[in-house]
Image 1 (tube, rainbow, N blue to C red):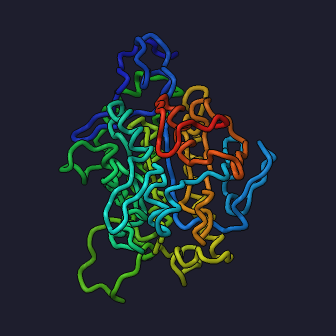
Image 2 (image 1 turned 60 degrees about the vertical axis):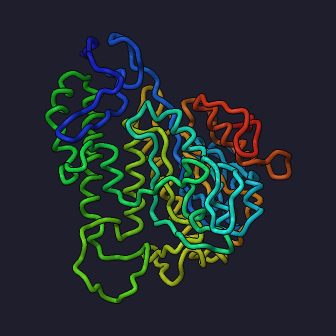
Image 3 (image 1 turned 135 degrees about the horizontal axis):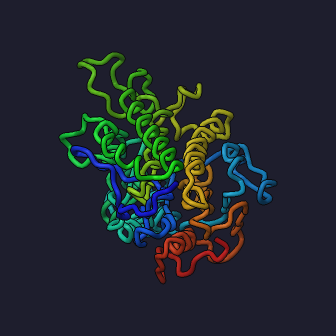
Length: 435
């Protein structure tokens, strides 16, 4: 029998020396609500996750048609087949300011803001949607936003525009790209650890005593949920500890054939697939525990130098691959979409009352151009999740050929789902009614 007279607050945490772990939604605890102790748990919040990959997609295989279970998807989107009923495929939106500068930098630096960009190596864009929402919700969560990346930023200048624009989609202010976290271990620590000096301590080992006490006061269903959650945290911890031990340098190329110094401690995983999966797991944990409600994950830069020997594609960097519709380019495209599907599947397996975590999330996937030939007059956009019942999936929304195709209209719609309503954002003054 469930215990109804619990005494836990909405920010109930598992605690240990230098560690605090927020809890997932549980039927026994009002984790997110401000309701009295005898009331049922409140409704889970809406989260926003943004995934980005640069250089667009295969020109003939990024498409969708139909609706619901009968929706047909191009080969790039094949990894999302299981999520067609929870997906919006959006065609025809664009950022007018992205057409005014060079290619790559000026098509990426304002992707989430629609702002004009400064040239000449100067840095000036606009505050992005994720950081605007982080300012609204920052006081409600331990981490206002997670800004993660799998490829380091590029500080050089390309065709009179800073390549920092190509390396950052999240902007805290018009002159400040939000710092990227490339290290899974540090991103993990930010979610759970309170003291840098305890960075070598297992999070789970630190909180097991408190978890044992909590377990006695929750329902059988919640005990299973707690066990599954702790197992997932342990799995991520162990994979972070093993990251970099395979000896496969995929994300970058060294200037020496052999190292001329002793091997440093593990940092950025050397396997790009494992790097992306770890970052994806950290996004899921952040949302699952309500440690953050806002996250961006930049899988690579626009004008990216990543290579993909894990896919049998090691002869050319991502940017150069994007210039032709080869079988290898399609293979790389699908690899990126599998990361989105991986996050969606994990979110959809986590129950939060009558909905899943995916149902309570808006998972936006986009690129800075439709194809590798720099087509930015229409952007590739996929939205997964239900925003807490506010978005109906299984639809294709086509705005091509229609007026008012601003990408920022979509952002006004997403902000509205999180109860943030602005009269203007970027170059848009009205949301997309269909979303």
